[in-house]
Length: 153
Length: 153
Length: 81
Length: 81
Image 1 (cartoon, chains in turn brown, blue, green, orange):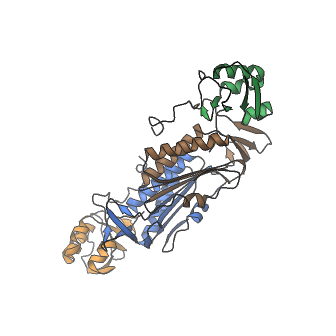
Image 2 (cartoon, each protein chain N blue to C red):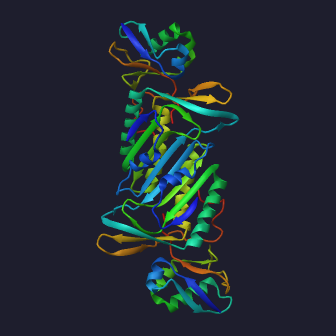
Image 3 (cartoon, each protein chain N blue to C red):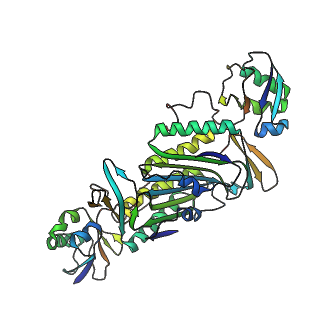
């Protein structure tokens, strides 16, 4: 299951989508709106995405994860629009034969998604200000970098 | 939430039990009955535990995890009795401010539980044979080893 | 040739539009295109310096050549998750 | 003194009981207790060699002294999860 949705994410459905009798381990990661970043208070987040490209990039990440680990099933769901405190913006689920692979693959997918997938977050602070998050010094994706030689190092 | 139950584990409830507005990340690990171990086919597992000691040991692991990582909430649920193919025997959920800690703490809790908590698994194979799993060469817990100097290395 | 460039996030807000149209030389490079957009939209200059350009939903480098049929987007540093 | 030892998993199945009762010397060590159980229940010997003993739900070492009021259990290598 790969999807981008403006609806609330059904994390139970995401976990169930990776169910397999061949899996001994499943890991579900959920990212949600955190109230405080240091002293600054967030009241909600807003996500925007370049949907067609984002879906293609997520699919490439899932394909690559499946070539790196022995994965039974793998799902990535990202929400767009306003995401209130405590609500989920992303859910990633991976099932594998053994637990080490589930933890590694799920963590890798989230790490890579945060670098390579055209989705942006706007902080809506408690003081009424807003701020698009465009990380400085962040790795800027280059063509051809999405290959087997890098990533899980 | 720490519990040992003979009922099916409600993984959604376990995930919800770690919900917090101060958490940006939650990781849910689910261990389930895998059909094949190499060539050998499992039809179900049976878990037995020394319940009072197991609950105390799990609580110690949770306390230690909370001293090692900045954890918002932490839950561990283990099932006992017969666990059919694809059904869950364990669910561990951790919520933290940032994702690295959630992945690390959840993986550590599962690793440690498999070494330090008096719960045992019996394989019920497709050929009708059964086998208690008592890992050879496994680390045998010693008093005082459950402390800050070891574990997450 | 006439091209459209999709804009997102801060780039969209700064320019107040989701897509801009530009008249550019045939076979313009991505690097030159970024310079051109920076001149036309000086408020976006700092962000463009830190942004990538996608051609047909793949990240490009400054040396890539832009074709009139390409789907073009400015991709500021991403922050999903 | 008379003590009870809880048995689990393969130990419980081998002995066909969840708890055994033994008459042992006062202040017996855990190491000596394991030897005694191995002699009384020779079928458990191999498993006992690989097992721990818990006293009041804490893992012990062979040097620990067993008291009559202790809650005692034989803990074969665990396999939860």
